[in-house]
Image (cartoon, one colour):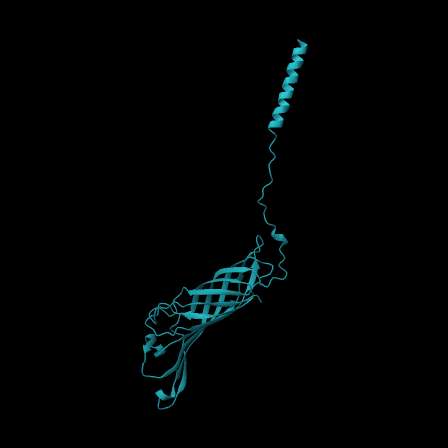
Length: 246
């Protein structure tokens, strides 16, 4: 009886050992998704697009009844303070002061800024105009939310930004250059400054995308260019190039 019991115990032991060999304990493999360590990113040499120059073309879009020329100019310059996110320095926010200017050119059009009814645009096929320009200047405060693929060196890699800017109108001037052949008094240049019928506050949405120091920008005005009832319904927009990285 004792021998039979010993044999049974031996068989059970061998069976348990075989099962362990056939079903080894599964070892949990480490996860391949390792959280990036952004503390190793060195931002001491970061240029951050502090100083930006923008050159581009502007237009009024819906002003079909006004004889605008096709090539109108915009020039902006900003100095922005950049603040990288601690959780991920590839993202940052930037804001600061700047100046925005637009120069809109017209063909065969008489412009009055100080008419009792507001700003008027009248077709004029008689006067020999050399140049007709409406120039505006704003003090602006833009804000951008940025993403960079190379936060350690903003002069390289792809960059994306979206944001908005608010501006205060400081100048509105119409410059009219008349050819000598159209007047018995000879040619002359006339400038009229008057911003009473313009909205003094401008709000616009902005976007940029680029590589290194160059990027494309776009801006669309959300507010009306003229005060309601004192000019055509105009919301200017512009596109162009940005030089940055300084």
